[in-house]
Amino acid sequence: MNPVSFEPKQMDHVQIGERRFVKLLSSEKIQARITELATAIREDYSDKDPLFIVVLNGAFMFAADLIRACELDCEIQFIRLASYEGTTSSGVVQQIIGMQIPVAGRHVIVVEDIVDTGRTMDAFTRDIQESHPASISVVTLLLKPETLEYPFESAYVGFEIPDAFVIGYGLDLDGRARHLEDIYQLEDEEQA
Ligand code: IMP
Image (cartoon, protein in one colour):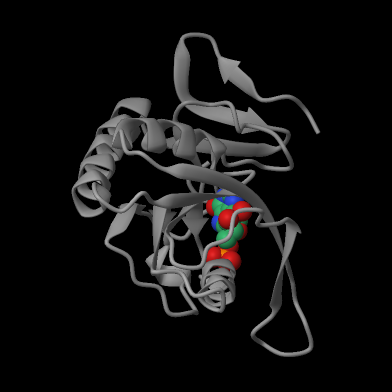
């Protein structure tokens, strides 16, 4: 796979191999929305000593900015999930890097980069629920409402976006483009 290439002084699109991505969300817009999310979370959790569970890899950049902006006394745990299609339609979500901090009685905030079908968050929150947290909520930077197949409700959604593959700000294509500060979406072949 080719490295990400930019047109000089023109960051409206990026090219990865054959694929062209166009800018969807600027860094300024992302940071402004994170400030709003952090303010809401701070108000809701100021006396709750929350446990943030950050879902690697994609949420690393969002989590770093969001949790700093929250300015809350808190604990942070990183996990890594892998999804496997089982013989049933519900699928299985396995923890590759698992939980080390007990969640019983804790106010848990799961930090996710993007909710697509919702399968990962549905499975993971049900998993966490079995350990009897005091409460559990999910903050996701992005949500694709058109592709949602599992129940997902959250007061903390950064942006609802169309059904197109996105990269940047932690989100990758085969490990590429995570470092970009803006978010780009795969260009519709017909528009190219
Ligand atoms: P879900 O289980 O279908 O909701 O998928 C969630 C996971 O799929 C996310 O945590 C991402 O790792 C990955 N994912 C879904 N859509 C995208 C995308 O547009 N770009 C990059 N990763 C994505």
